[in-house]
Length: 92
Image (cartoon, helix red, strand yellow):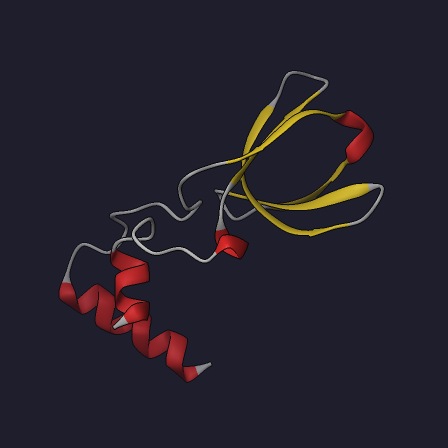
């Protein structure tokens, strides 16, 4: 039930480790996504489109935690899609 709720309503109950972040760089680019890891020099960032990139900390001018999940709501529209997704998740 928790997994189904997390897929259908990602903002309802969210673990703090999955909270989204907004990072603004010195070039003026704003990036929303998920911090995967962090060192003293860089942030390993997963963008909403699935791209993963390391952002040097010396280029970050603003960083804040977002209230919502970086996972978009409404991706699963039919019961069959949810069934296939759960089958895939449990097969791994």
